[in-house]
Length: 342
Ligand code: DP6
Image (cartoon, rainbow, N blue to C red):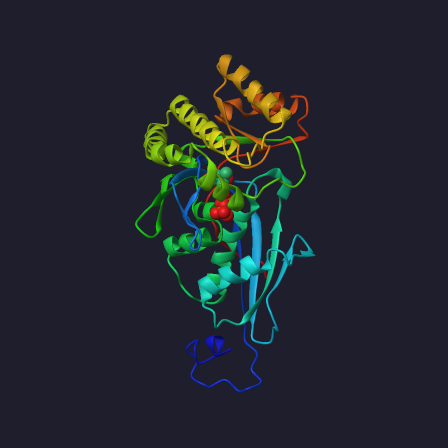
């Protein structure tokens, strides 16, 4: 493939036909959790969200992806956590085409996450963020960080946010998205406790579920119309490090998104009885003055966000809640980046 020929890379001597060009890089990215949610697309082709969102990038959970382009490969291949994954390969190949161009050499992609996919922590977000960063360096395409976020977001809307660290806002522009780091992880080092309430595969994937909501939920238009007010509220709460204010708007926005889902046809109820038990546990801690709030995505796990002083209480109380299978604790972290694995 001439794109990776020695000449294209700026070397003087022309490539001989037997030259085999290999280019590789490894990147790591963490999942993020939305406090103001992305739910719905205005353009499904480009994966442009219908609403802006604000998230926190996590610290201790990560996906590591190695991308190797080689002229000699006969096709793309994908290995996820040591197992061949044919189902995800077309989406991954499309993402590489978008980063590198359709004329690229074929690629071998290896992905590993240090957290269970069933944890409901959008492994697609950390995976696509790591993928675009690794592909950009391997193929020497030198995209800007903002462009890489746009490319990750085309693959999965929430993945754009995992390019950045700490508190991240994704804003809608005319025909693109814009990302802003509102506050670095160290600027307001909150903690997240994930309560795992079920480990089966989720009922309906986000991509399909969002479309069902857009097409059928009587609350969808209101949800979109009100999002700007929630974003403004959360942004101000983050600037002021006002935990109570952020807690109020984040829980409101989460429950509003789930109301849109519940009112869709067919309805989408992602919670189970244990999810509700966990919500109740958070409410009880709040009434005792513990600085904690919850958020829930398109799955049954509850994510409790708290101040560092409360993390042990929150961890213990959620772990002791009947039906909780496991808890995971993490702080906030930085964005996607290259790592040296050789
Ligand atoms: C509920 O980013 O997974 O977690 O763009 O279709 O890949 P696609 O959807 P995805 O949806 C995330 C939905 C959410 C809310 C959020 O993370 O903002």
